Length: 269
Image (cartoon, rainbow, N blue to C red; front, top):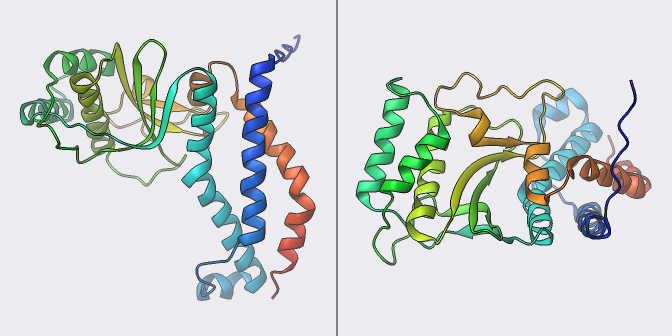
């Protein structure tokens, strides 16, 4: 079987990836130089692993937290803007929905949980578009903070909640309620052609197997509620970018490897 050739990036795509690399390198150098644990008292970890590996564990965990707190949103903003979209990180929605709209959304969720209706996000969003009404002026929504808010050239809106690849196990219904309310807010308050509210994950921890963490939840329309790995990044960038992002991490990792190893040597037993 012939192996498909990797499609060459155009000039604009290569430039945006250089911006991503530059930001990642800056963040990692800052983490190496400025890292200081919030606490060094981890008696149980130290008892098992010793002080050196406890400190290394703490450092690696700090790096992972940095990825979750800032990098994914920053990358989404960079890729989205280069694709010609309006992108805001940590966006506070300045609107709300009416009490009647809120009640109807909660009733939809109840029917899904009671299995009185088959859950299909596309059809549900059509219903929401029909009945969504704005709330009182000056009132903001209880779920107003959106990780990444996007408006594309055709006035399609995306409310994105970026979660860790292995989120805490909790009822997806609570997450779905938030996504439906965001959809209603979009249709009720914005001049939008379409509205999508999504739960997104930067990578699939089960790869190459399908992600199944929410697979058994009847409130989850896995096809339309969640975008993971390639679907997430490629959709925002407008071109196949996920593998390029992984490659950038590998390149940066090699560039800072010696400094990383020197930093690890400061962690002593």
